[in-house]
Image (cartoon, rainbow, N blue to C red; front, side):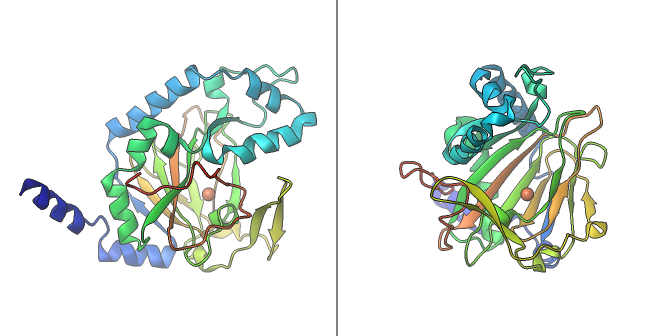
Length: 294
Ligand code: FE2
């Protein structure tokens, strides 16, 4: 009887009000403050610190050290769709391949399958409230397709140019949806998100294509620049979740402040939609995209 009651509660569980749904449709993004508590954020930060501590960075330092190995760098990125890989900030390494700072303060991000391969991220990413959020957003039978831990470390955290996520994760029918989770306060000073309200009505401007030979190139449909003057800052306290429509133009500026801005991002798609076979992120057959129930 208890199980039935819980199941019933879960089925009726909603996270978005009618107004929030309306705002999301209108703006293409939605801020949900206090979606996660401080302990959850701290847990991910501490766990990731351990992942980095125990990670042997020697091979990756070699890959990132010289421009001669740019294809090697490309392959390291292209093969990361079903792995946990670490990416340095541009400018984190000296010419001899040594790091200018401790490796923890040199990283740009970790990606792109934390949500499937790491037990802590697996559980965090599959919380029922995230599944309920997908339901409220009409993402039927959601699949989790990408995760990233993004650092934006003090003084070195680089700019992310204005883009639409569908450029990188193109899904036919229903565009990909991003969940951007602030693990620390995100402010104008430390590189918060910026977005153009309503910009998700803009058709896709370009796609990043992966060739059969494993090279990546952009296919451009519209090369007019984004109206950056329309970008609005999305300053959020830690624990906030920002929903991002796949066609929403957004960006973040560099972090020149002494305060870090860690975030965790997840991208989801509806199972019935078709994930493009020429997207850069591909999974090997033994690591298919999975949903909330594993
Ligand atoms: Fe993005």
